[in-house]
Structures are given as structure tokens and as C-alpha cells.
Length: 110
Image 1 (spheres, one colour):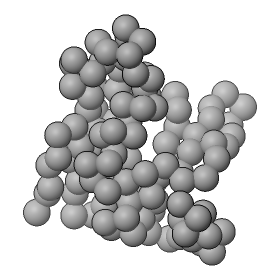
Image 2 (cartoon, helix red, strand yellow):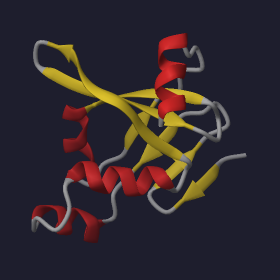
Image 3 (spheres, helix red, strand yellow):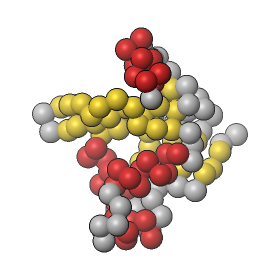
Image 4 (cartoon, one colour):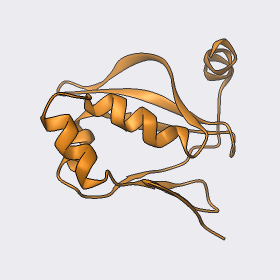
């Protein structure tokens, strides 16, 4: 069974689809909210939140970890993918259930 919450759709396997509403995209372009703020608001609906600090994914990309408290899994978000959301398209985050001790420590710190 899939669960649908406003801008996010959660699947049984832990994956999440995110798609911003048009009015939120317009608010972001007008400077009312940043893309990260909109993402955080959307993720709250599926019991997810950003943990730790941003980190380097490659020479050209930064990212962060997102923890799903409902499914007890993590996702890696590439900040470059936020452009997908601002174009009105769907971003898919893939669940990783292999959480190491260092990541568990980040989760516990909140």
C-alpha cells in the first residue's frame, strides 16, 4: 500500500516521490521561501528530516542525508536535484536501510 501526503508519496519499499505544488514553486521564485525550506516542509509530511551537515558528493555536487523516522531509513539528496522540483517535476529519493553507527549517532543527535 502506498501512502500519499500532499507533495510526497511514500512507497512500501521506503522510496519517496516528491513534487512541489505550483504555488510553492511561485513562492520560491518570488523569494518567500528557499528550495530547501519547501523541501523540509514537504518531507515533514512523511516523517522525514535532514540530519547532519552538507557534504561533497563530487567535484560539482553537494548533498545531505535525510532520515525517514517512519521507515528507519536514509536518503542522500543531491542539492542539484532541487532544480527538478522547481521545474514542477518529480524527484525520487531511494531508501537505504543500511545505516552505519556514525549515521545512527547523527540521527540520535537530531
